[in-house]
Image 1 (cartoon, rainbow, N blue to C red):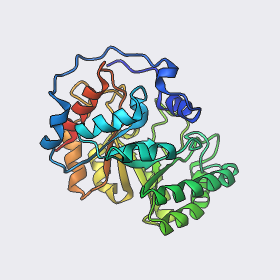
Image 2 (cartoon, one colour):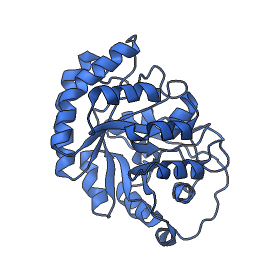
Image 3 (tube, helix red, strand yellow):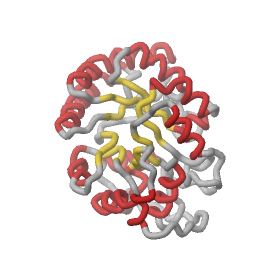
Image 4 (cartoon, rainbow, N blue to C red):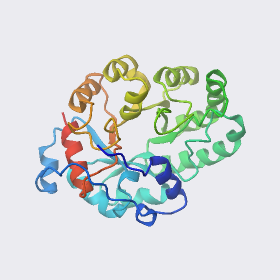
Length: 300
């Protein structure tokens, strides 16, 4: 499958500048012919409801948010990931939750592993956590940042130190901070939280139920493989999941190497009741058809 030249990092950067995907000139990529999956409005009644389906906003930037929330709900979405404060009410009015909050300052490259970033990040995240709590949103994303020569040991110590005040604030507000595991091999070179055991060590060091991991299946397949064994071993450390086809980060159908129905059953077997968010770059001309297909694949 062809890989989009538009990365998550590029989209998030443009979101922070207030530029949507249309303004970026996001290309329409020729992918596999869309499977005809029927009327989207019939999807909800067919779902098993064992999985809380979500999707990442940045993958659908060319669809107006209000429309995406409305049509996404018809497909079976109960949440949308990576929304900023001014977007929360838009989706709530359509009966969809913000399943994972962020804001323009949240930065994959410059994170908590560098103590020079702590003061600014703490001030910004304190405000975001409070806003999320007031809006009834229970998860906020954080990032380790890139290494920039910082050792894994020092990076872990710095993350724990920088997050300490924020985790305590999150505890008081019934919000959970989740640090995303990303690959440093293909998409996010030099990112520090790029292996599950490192993230697990950080969760243990912080020692709070309000700090967990976002396990991105796409990213960890690239870095580690062994997805089901890892989920089974470390599920207590994981509060959120992302999907994506490997290789290419496109649709999660049978044109890529991961068996998502089996992975979803493994996730459910751990007792998980959080969100699973689709984070693939659609190649279908009708992106909502791609999303519908993914929801049905994961609805086990």
